[in-house]
Amino acid sequence: MFYFLSKTVSILSDAVFMHGFLLTALLGFMLLKRTRKFAVVGLIIVSGASLLITVIPVGDVLSHPLETRFEKPKLSQIEFAGTVTLAGSLDPDSYLERGEMNVWGSADRIFAMLRVASLYPDKPVLFTGGDGNLTERGFSEAVVLENWLDESGLKTSNMYFEEKSRNTHENATKSLEVVYREWPELAKKPWVLITSAQHMPRAVGVFRQAGWNVIPYPVDRSTSNDIHLASLNVSDGIKSLGRALREWVGLTAYYWTGRTDAWFPGPQDPGAEN
Image 1 (cartoon, rainbow, N blue to C red):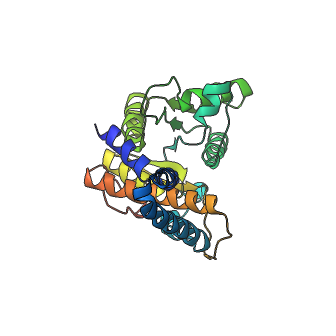
Image 2 (cartoon, one colour; image 1 turned 120 degrees about the horizontal axis):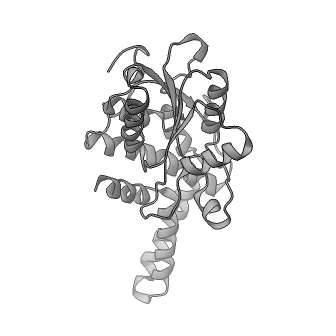
């Protein structure tokens, strides 16, 4: 039930979806004489808001505290049992339509995983994530990535893949099941958590609540410390706002339902046990 509700809320809080939906609805109202005035006012408001969030980088402003919540540690200076990398880097539609593995905006997650697997061959490197779609469509990001790495000669013996989880909560719980099954002696030790910087606060809170002792390793940061007025790129402005809203709404929903240990999880002693 939570999975269905979380995906529904995610869709409704998607700024790109809502922007398109509102424009379509208002254009429809333009066809009806009695709602034409309402539609004109609505189009003016939506157009003005679109321009405002483009000139003033609202998405970056909301994203920046998420992306700077955790500093990236130097792995050579910390003790850790293994790493967990969250899915979210592959384009499902490309694979389902053409059978091709295409990487999109969060490719740094995979690059970080490959680097750690090479530098620390004695430590387990776990990749977790199936398909976050509401309906079953025969896709699993972990399976696709594992097959591609194997065929490319990049898969190492310390790589493992959890292929069933559909959201961050299931990433945490199902991956923990793998750890207890494969390396029970490492289950309570610190594990490095690799995901996009914007997603890291929610991921950390969920993993801690599930029983993990995690060391955040944020990648794929998109904002800078200096926020400037954005260019007149409406599409990028709306997408940026949508990504930020998704995380803030997700943090709130996960906290209300008891799936994170705090509303806005923050740093703690890397060696501290949960």
